[in-house]
Amino acid sequence: MDDFDRLLARLEPEGLGPEGPGWQQRKSAQTRISILEAAIDCLATRGFAHTTTQLIAETADISRGAMLHHYPTKGALIEAIIAFCFYKRMQMLAEGVRGISDLQRVQEFAGLEILWRSFFTREHRAYLELNIAARTDVEVREIFVPQARRFTRIWRDEGIRIFPEWSADPERLARASDLVEAVLEGLALNHDAWESPERIPRVRAFLRQLVSGIYSGVLDFPEPHATPAAETAGK
Image (tube, rainbow, N blue to C red; front, side, top):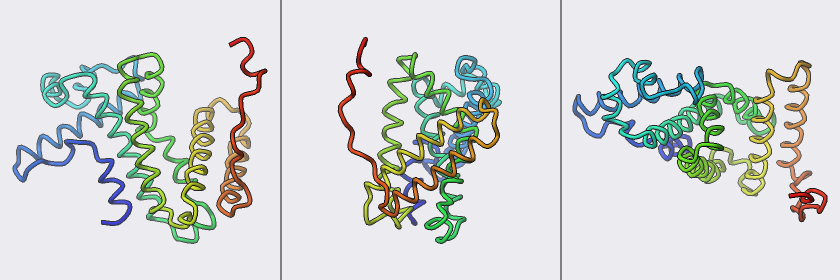
């Protein structure tokens, strides 16, 4: 098992692999995958507000009762969807990084392009719908936040194995990852709203320079300071 396989094994949602060698176990696992794929499609195309268990069942071409057999509550289904989104997205990232050379990864920071493409997948759109819903839906928030934090912990644990060139200073990789995710996700959200075609490529090129500087040790994150009084006035 290589480092990518180890990462994917830690992220694989419960119940996706057959629990036994029999036909029934394989069928159950495939049904669960069909349900989660359908849920991602519904969230990505219809949004959270319009995604119902009935719609998911129809999209998966199964009865609602069959779906409830595998995911008897809304909470169980949401938890499985979030985990599946993480898993599928990480599969894409793993395959992308596997396909680039050491030179592309270490000197050209080609992993940034792979990560950028991941923000336009149906899995990320579905994840984003749940992320936004978690801001106002208490039930979704109670499920989403622990799952998202778990993903972050696993990524930090395994990231240094996937990008061993950062092994001299794992904390530097963690800080660079925070910057990259914040910037690229913000750019992806504004992709259609920004009219000038050069704005996003310009920011992405600057981000690459920043990551190169962090990697080489030329740049580092400043220590956080107390919030200025002007920012807290009126709160």
